[in-house]
Image (cartoon, rainbow, N blue to C red; front, top):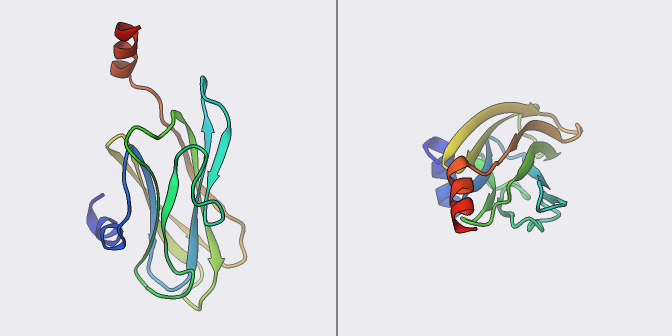
Length: 154
């Protein structure tokens, strides 16, 4: 990822792969990232990745979780699937203002999603005491080249 969020993720040692979902915000509040994955056939099942379930059954991993204690005003969180691991599925991304450490409320949050080399950018705001807020949902689908390759192998 590029820009300021990319710099923060690099400093934090964040992982990347076929799918990566990251958030950034500018205060001491504890903002949490959550991704729900609903696998499409032939895979099946639902997996949720968040601070309570850092490694999802779908292969995703929350590897950066900042401001559990107020440590930085340039915070990031990151969930990623290593190359070759991310399922073809529906991904639902949510953010949650988990703990108010005295920063501005509401907190503005930048969301960056990387899927197979393509980036999507979103912004939202979350308030202390509010439930998790869904930012977006997207589907990672098999591409035509991969389908042709599978047909040639079969």
